[in-house]
Image (tube, rainbow, N blue to C red; front, side, top):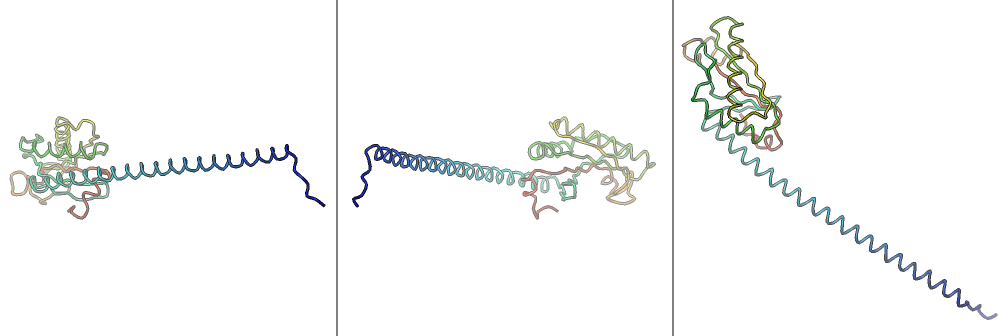
Length: 213
């Protein structure tokens, strides 16, 4: 029995189907290549952005470390990591029974304000005021609060207007030199303010590292 011959119309249909299949495969390959190219481009863009962010973070960390070192060495500031953030113990003290911010504190407050504006713009800064034990507890609480208020106003005058600053008066509690009052040796250290910066930025936390003390 001789093989059946395929008619011309059938051949035409078969050829069309083969052509369409080839075209479909070509379209799929083109689409896959386009998607792959787009994916590679997105990955490359993400890698570039990440590298740029890492470089920017490194620059901020180095700048912050330099500024903190200046506070320590030039102004004798002690910086400690606490649960809520960072505590800055700075030599900002007051005369006996006085809440006036002394002119010699201005350079230190100016440097501190600049650091806050640069690295902690969205963090809350707390100014803690203290007094020596002379006088009643209620009077010392009010006096320590006035000291903290005046320091907050001084920081605002130095450009720290966009940062939330709260004040607390602790009176004669947490004395540096227990019992020292009025004009006695060590009493001035009891009449002070302490600064706490809550929740620093990522670069700030990295910059501190083991050097904080």
